[in-house]
Image (cartoon, rainbow, N blue to C red):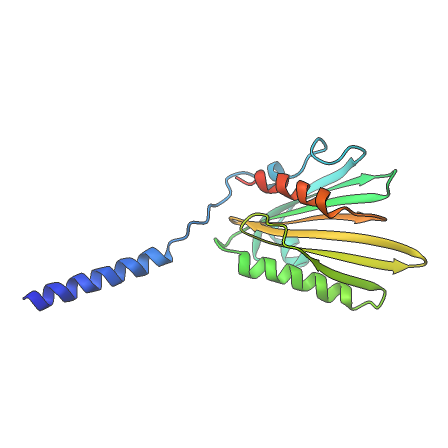
Length: 188
C-alpha cells in the first residue's frame, strides 16, 4: 500500500513538472498592430509620414513565408532634407513563441540577400536589448560613388515581431535604438 502511494505521488510530481514546463509565460498582444506603429510625433523632427498600411496574412507570407504571422502593419517616414527614411514593420504571430522562427530567419535573410552583391557590406551590430530577443545589422551599399547606409533593429516581444529600419546617406544606430525602444513599449 505504501509503495502505491509513493508511486502515485511520484507520478503526480512528474506530471505537474511536465505540465508546468509546457505552459508559456508569453503574453499575447491585445491591440491592433496599427496602434503599435510609430507616429509622426515619435520620430525625429524633420521626418514626414509617407503612409502606413495593414498587412494581411497573405502579404506576410509573400514577404516571408516562414514567419507564420497572422496580421501586420507597416509605416514609412522620410526626411527630404537629409535624404533619410525610417520604416517599421510589425507582425503579430499566430504562434505563442515566434523567437526562434522569425528572428533567426529575418537576420539570415538580411545577410544572405545583401551579401550576394559585391558592392554591399553587412555588419552585425551589438545586441540592442529590445523585447525578448533582438539583433541589429548595418548594411552599407556603394553605387555610382554614393554610399547608402541601412540599419535594421529586429526584435521579438511576446507574440510580436518588429523590424525598425533607418536608412539613407547616413543612419544613426543610437537614434534607431531609441525608436525601437518606443516601438517595443507600445506592444500590449
